[in-house]
Image (tube, rainbow, N blue to C red; front, side, top):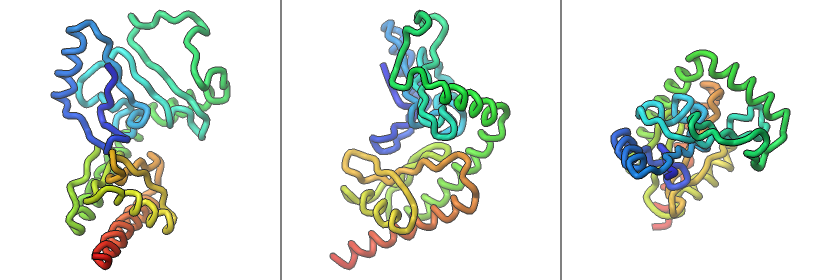
Length: 222
């Protein structure tokens, strides 16, 4: 059983800890392996290194990727409980196998970024800043409440395709954003964990302006 503790592409839906605990217990009762997909939400994206840490759930296997490489080197990790580690040397291969520079940069990135609690504390502050700003944007424009954890957030909009319109408007102003949801109705934020306060502030302002521009254009067309 594979689950995301914070659904990403589907629209940024954080799972409740009680739901995760019940799901994991049920899976184990049937002798099935619980797997957490942390490709998009691991490595501090939701605060702690693993997205499931605050829930108390301990999966048998975790999928990690994205920031693990460090300095843009592609790397993917598959941490697992010792009893499931039955691989022989060189047997467990994947897309990025044999990329020695990625092994070096990934190791160093983990050592530097996660040797203490500084980055985790930083992501908590960053996440609260994003939450407040998106909540104000949603209130100002009559949108549903934003969803997320840590710095990873989604801003639901009020019609299919609206997220693409907002992302296009933001891109013209120099800001890269993602869309999410089954109908491109959620603007998704995944800011770098090392983003400066000034850049974060500017990005949130550009996002608000993009939402306002799309809302204004729809109002004019109506």
